[in-house]
Length: 280
Image (cartoon, rainbow, N blue to C red):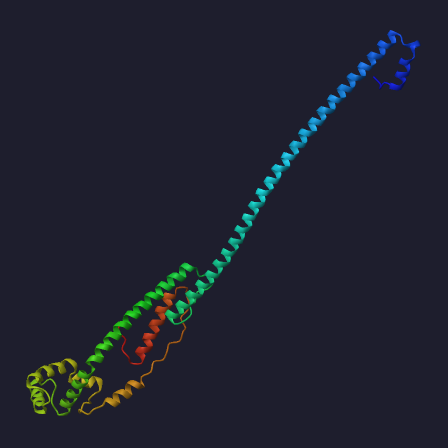
């Protein structure tokens, strides 16, 4: 039904000539219909407004949830960024430690073996550790030998005065034409020379025999075949000995232990070539 013209309706109702009941009833029905339509429109508008309010509340809740999720994602991203930075620092530290370890291994190997190692970039740390263990074992063995040598040198230093005296006595006896193996004659001559109590002469002669003999005097050059003192000549012969270092022509076959073994053999041959005995 179309909207009612209220001004026209007032004019019509104010005219008594046309104000019949029939006409008034129709107008009243029209007004009721119009009111029903208005009520229905208001109800629709209220439902629409309520639906829009619900949609707005839902949108606001979704926005709040999205903001919360975004905040959590931002926190996670920040944690991941910090973790990435830590990993990058750890990687840099590991690289530095690896370089330092390689340098330390090179320095240790050079300190033990006397020269730089021959491993390359493909040489793994496991191989380097094995080589270092082998080098340290060689060094320890050499150290043990050095300790034994030093102990023996100290013992010889303590015995040196007695040995020198015994050597002088042996040379004197030999120069006097007395055979060192003639025990009784040596004892008799020592008694004549004096300087020792009688009860010590025999013991001292035993010590001399334990240190030197006529053959040893000849071997070491302290006396010649005619009994002359030839120490200077023997020293000159020893100083004249020279050892020619072997050429480093050993091929690197990947096993440094074999290479060192070959070089040791070459040095032994060079020492023997100089007429110097090498203990096997």
